Image (tube, rainbow, N blue to C red):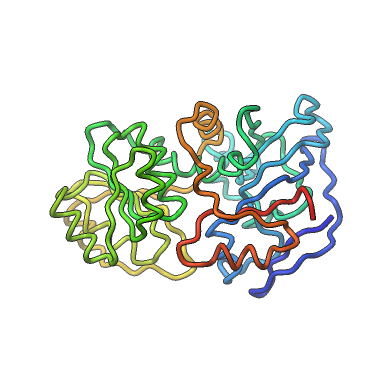
Length: 329
């Protein structure tokens, strides 16, 4: 099979053996995969990654030795693969298994390949009414919904999402179902318009200081700030906009370190909540019921053989979702 390889900051296509599924695995023929900011960070050297990247995907099960009910189904998968035997897996959540592998990120070949083997326990069936282009968003939409699972968000709270990238827009549009007056702040009018079209209140500013000043004048300080800027400075901006005893939810992961004076966190008793992956089953329900429109976020699709061009496109400032199509060369 053909697979995309990241190594030493470069990208290439390579012939690799088609995976052989074990008795508890399924073999998936990949249809579409999405390029995530994490993939771009991996290409730049994040986590010393080398191998097949990709964790946002949809495909069809073509072999399922121990789970014939999955054969022929369109699926996505949870990216976290726990060992299944440790106390964390047995009692809590495989997402935090100390022995886990992570699809396309750590210890597990990713979805930027024509075929992919995954444990059946990670599989999420895609509803028939959800298109492949929508289904690619199952993983990022689940992550966008996760703050609503971690916190008791209520309709009367003041909630701000910082960052008008793909994750920020998804987060604001998804959580608007819990917090109708949620606000999304960012730099780009065109990108903010995608969220405004789905009922989100948006505010635009060209630099962090200006947007902080404008938001504080209009809203004061927020109960909850969800930081999804993708920038190391995002936490500093979030802390300037959260009230004492409020909560900052951290979504950004970057190769660059984040340096913040933590005295405000202590003095104002601010809660910091890390928020990573989410529940694909919940995301599938949102897409099936039409609660979020993800298709406006798709900016371009490339055949997988043009992966270098696709990655260059995805890395452009302000780029939205770029897809790789594995259904044809």
